[in-house]
Image 1 (cartoon, rainbow, N blue to C red):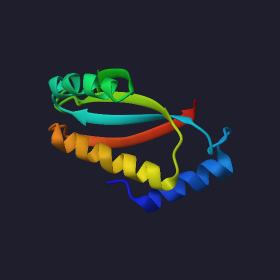
Image 2: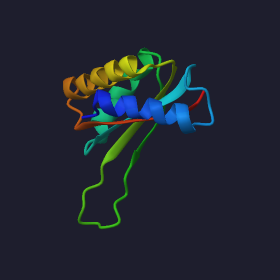
Image 3: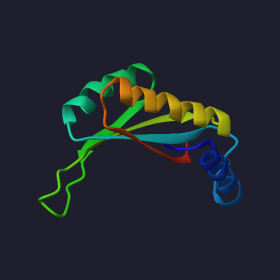
Length: 113
């Protein structure tokens, strides 16, 4: 689980090193993984209804065929976050995964909007 302390470090790193202004709206990507694509297919319209853009659903294509592939759902939303709002968003997404039987909410990435 992503901690609030990790969010504090993320924002400090962005302020020091990111080539964009981290005080304004940014494009936040959020990632979910499950062995079942069906669960992610069912989640996609729920995210669309909440204003997210569904970037795609894809499998991990493991190099070793003995390992089961995981399916990944990538959604994005242009948002302005602080440490506290991003921590709250992460908690919301962990709950979403649990409530929808999705194996994991795997975290986020960020870039300029």
